[in-house]
Picture (cartoon, rainbow, N blue to C red):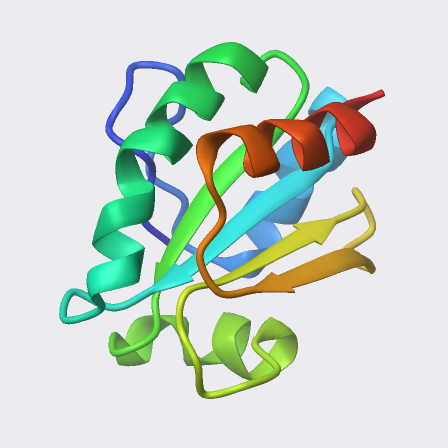
Length: 118
């Protein structure tokens, strides 16, 4: 699992690690499924970085490259369609709060993050 480029989060190497951090810190998880070739995924990156700066205190941010076989467990468990981007919001126990398929604007993402971070 790749971290968003910030000082806030270190690199996560497994689903179990992401869930452990979420449980330890009492935070939900935002997962952004992307691919390097996906134009809409790239377009979403600045909004995600801005949202991470605003919501890092209340949400664990994770991005998953669907083309990287190291993350196949995460992809098979949470990615529901072949379309990208796909954004999944998880509880600390790994259960899905909601999934948003496709591009999300910064404002749309911030609205969802406000709801899940309480």
